[in-house]
Image (tube, rainbow, N blue to C red):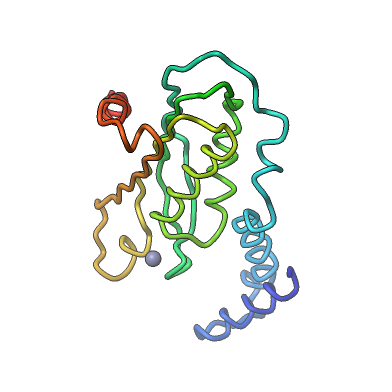
Length: 184
Ligand code: ZN
């Protein structure tokens, strides 16, 4: 994969009219290939890898909220970054997940070519699958470089997506509690 990426980046550099042998660009294909491998490593991970041994029994049945998880992904339409924050809430049903694992779930799906709607859904589904929660809510707020750097060049618009599963979907009170907590 590394060699293939490297020669692809070489071609991009040439295609835009640059001199690939110019000093400042000499190692760029190698560096860009390495960066791209890192930014797409989610393709080579599975949910069981990232949640490994971190599901614990618990009697807790109150809402757990993990707020402001930093998120860096790339849109599948332009391969440009979108960056923002994810907020995850769930109501345990006998099992809780270690705190750091939520960030790892976010990273695993974010390090793929994505659209924000699908990313939000995959994170919610993963939390439900791993914990068997009574309900899961995920909100993502992100800014998309494909809107900010090109096209409409709207620098301040932010996209907000949400997915509600289980009692977050069925019960307006639970859903509102989550959304109210996010406002603080
Ligand atoms: Zn885009």
